Image 1 (cartoon, rainbow, N blue to C red):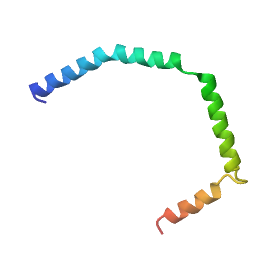
Image 2 (cartoon, helix red, strand yellow):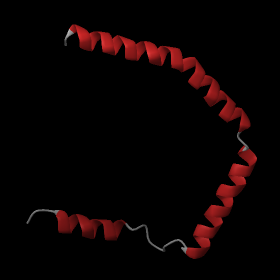
Image 3 (cartoon, rainbow, N blue to C red):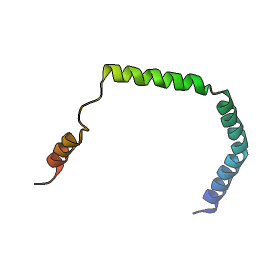
Length: 75
């Protein structure tokens, strides 16, 4: 690594060190502003819709998976 590359790397690290506290503040603000109750309700509705439109299968899919593996196996 040349001296110029080392200096560029040091400058890059220094920029991230200066940015880290600001990024943490943004992250903390996003977490505080999050409406967890609304998000859980939304996810519950999405889950119900998925179940309604794609009901659970009666099998686990393991037999189908084994069929695929058999096709992929060298003969």
